[in-house]
Amino acid sequence: MRYLVTAEEMMRYDKNTTQFYGIPSLVLMERAALKVFSLVQTVLPEPGPVLIAVGCGNNGGDGMALGRILSQAGYEVTFFCPNIQGQFSEAAKVQYETCKQYGMVFWDEIPSKAYRIVIDSLFGIGLNRNITGDFKETIASLNALEGVKIAVDIPSGIHSDTGEILGIAFQADMTVTFGFQKRGTVLYPGCLFAGRVVLAEIGIEKDSFLGKPPISFTYDDLDLEKMPARKKDGNKGTFGKVAMFAGSVGMAGAAVLAGKSCYRCGAGLLKIITPEKNREILQISLPEGVLIQLKSDKPYFEQFQQIEETMQWATCILAGPGIGLEQYALNILELILQKSSCPLIFDADAINLIAKSEKLKNLLKEKAKGGQSIVLTPHLAEFSRLINQVREVLKSNQLEEAIRFAREYRVVLVCKDARTIIASGREEEGIYINSNGNDGMATAGSGDILAGMITSFIAQGMNVFDAACLGVFAHAKAGDLAADTTNRYACMAEDMIEELKNLRKGIANESL
Image (tube, rainbow, N blue to C red; front, top):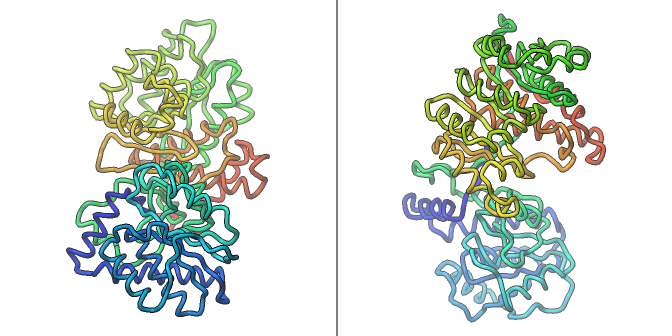
């Protein structure tokens, strides 16, 4: 797990490190400069011309310390300080005076010459207003220069919390970030300006949380070890029993994809509630699934007893992939919300039906507040319908709306987008922001696969929030593997399912 911090959180941890633990700011600044110096050495092993744009705050102080170290190592350093007459922070003032003592010159305009590396140390994580006027022109000029672009901590112009571009942003090839990664370098569009992010430890560690860890986090490859372990003496029932309401007439593929991914992630048994016309397709494509066929010549409410029995049998229920928006689907959702007792996952059309029905919304809220675990997995358009907000408006405040909805309904909300966000109704569980995946995954059936994966993990006993986080991460990893095997243009849902076989390779202690 990797923490993603906001500006307020990072400044608090910095303060805790200096004031509670007594490590001086200048010590942290020197450590930060040394980390960037190491990266510069890998990019440019032989000393050459380097431009460092510095501001008057602590971020500028990092850049000044870096410039001094580079100069002493033989690099030709040019300092550019567009606000040279401004008010320096205490630490930056010390670094400025030290550099002056070493005879280093600060220019208020960019000297016209060729630079091998251009380093941005203008604005730090505290920037929260648009860059305008001379500073906007300055960043545009830096972006226009040749050479490798490196940002110190965060590219100037990126909002540290939201990833928003504040008028303009430094276009970095690499960003060296200190302590913990800043949330804005993961979220779009900020991540497009951060380039490759290198996390550097400078002495601000988890001890500096003092009991208040960051609210946001993401997963790395080691988190695949959280996949449910297999018991050597287990049986089909041991590994979870899934009831899946999926696939309307003409949409059997959604049931196939969700069912396959459910099995690929370890579920032991799967029963699919689907119209009888899907029988042949499902029996050929997914022979492992047991079919509960909804007969078209018999009123659906007369078949509810069989559906109820299936729900009571299940350890987890998935409803939604390809079910359509017909009245019978709405009636079955109502039955699920009234009669079920195990964890529920609502995806795709189930969410669209809930969005259109105040009765279903009220049942959903009543169930969740009564203690039943519920996961919703909308993409951005489905979420906009659910909360009755214009999609373009939602795009700009996706994180806040996801948190608000999850807390109001007491559910786990998986808001799918290029950066999927998972919010929990329980504040202490935090916010997951996915940092893997690729645009090749933007293909039909991808969401059905994710729904099946999350369902499988829950059916095997995982906490619903943890299962959602793992499902999203593992889904993204499978997408990355599929893109490598084929390519991002040719990637199809079946390619992702095929790669699920490779996720746990190399993970030790798979059996208990």
